[in-house]
Length: 345
Image (tube, rainbow, N blue to C red; front, side):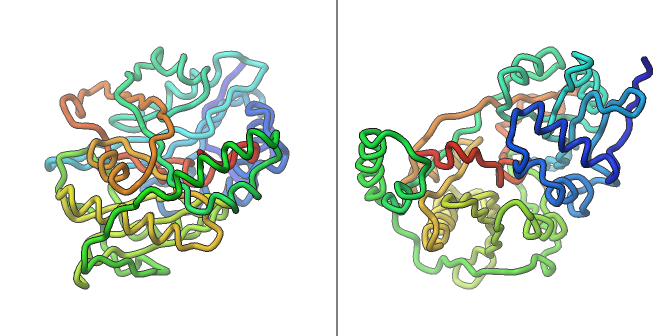
């Protein structure tokens, strides 16, 4: 047996899609394995990466394992640390352990690496690769249109659906909090005028530039909308909304400030814009840092649980640093959805 490590090419996509569908026991029309989505994820320019972001381990041309990298460069306190998130990690049935070997090889491509959540198998394996449990990513939700949500939810026992409707109706009445005078959001169709969205922060925060943000506006798996954040007509940052069926997600948010009150205003404004979209039943957001957690709680969101945040940092470049500011566009969380469970509430 001769194993070969190489980058995925467009000619490999059909075979790769079959592997992903088989490994994840998914429907043939699963969005994450759609050919257009795969091309966008792995080949389209935008993320700071040269060439294909998808890698294979093959034997005589047959795929034994796959893993894709989602590059992000972390900046904090004047430092820069290259880092990758991993997505679409799959091990074929013919060679147990091939996925482990592939991922170990990919760890050499950056200073650090991140895995958020993952299957039970993934959570069991990553510590063996040198990942440490470095925190949690909390999921927050705010119910906006409980009746529409009830009508668009998959069929369930009437008693269960009615109880959920009553509970969510009550939750939808919680106050989102007031937005300070002068704050507003302005829809933008391109980030071309933006050089970058870096700001000084004590928290490790991923680099953003116009190429990467525009790349997300072209996402074929969800409707992604961009907004500039303004305070008294002064540009303060931006946010991205990702609309998937009846759920609208605050997929990314960035503010040129470390002031907690301003971050709360930014999250409240993003949530209000998301709620105003006519098909939004609930608004979803994540928090990996205390300031994001506090801002979302103050904006009427409810914590709906969390997933583990695993960090690979062999050079200890992030030792002693506060939690990484992680958002949904650091991977595929901005568009993935289980049709059987389309809502978090």
